[in-house]
Amino acid sequence: MQVVGIESCYGFGDGCFNIPLIEAIAEKYNSRISVAVKKSCEDVFYNVPCIKEIINISDLYQGINHYNRHKIKNFQITQNCYFPTYRNEDCEHSLASTALVVGNKVCGVDFNPRPKIYLNDTELSAINKLDKSVKNVAIESEYYSGQSWANDNDFERLIIANPNVKFWWLSLRKPQFNYGNIIYASSMMTRRECVALISNCDLFVSVGSGMFCATLSMIKQPKNIWILWIDDYYKYENFIMKNKWLPDSTRWIKNRNDWNLLILENGHAF
Image 1: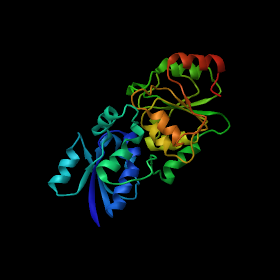
Image 2: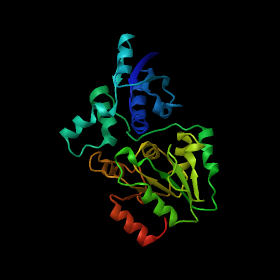
Image 3: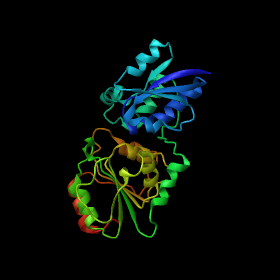
Image 4: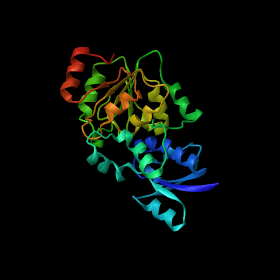
């Protein structure tokens, strides 16, 4: 069985979208896959059955150059290499559909583009940390990714309004405030365990980074999802909701004014 090289250089979320494409390539070429990826997001590719090895690279095209030197058939599937062009051709093109278009145009494969992540039993057992006697809310707080309008003040307002809710803070940085109902989850759990935990929460507050993309793949999803980010450029919403990757109850909250009204009207998370 031959090995096919794949470069998926950036992003945990990009990797979730690329796993179905990688599996389609493996099937078409009856191959095992060597995937070249940055160390910071290699964990998205753990446990994928068709992946033979993970090669760490530090920059774009290092993986492709490696495969070419070793005369290994390869494909560049990094979204950043294609999305700007596809969007220029179609202003409604979604980043969520980029892997599918790359598969069709570049790799000659068709597949179900719903993102995937393969969590093992140990990672899935993270849900046992949830106290089912209270409501659990996961906050994906990497708002400085550039997609979100939210900041710590917005999250703090939600937390203050819900003293009887347990909040799981999913960020490598510590929260800038301290309340008894906040758990700094990323200090004691892997990113993959955090994804498992999100799937069983009562509410997931998302700012649009990798954990959001991983959540799209889950068969079991949070009961409620609030998305606090601007969708003008990447055009996720229509594609994702059309394909029913999120529950109908999902709320897209597109600016701080709408968020303030939501908190003011409800005074609580549920």
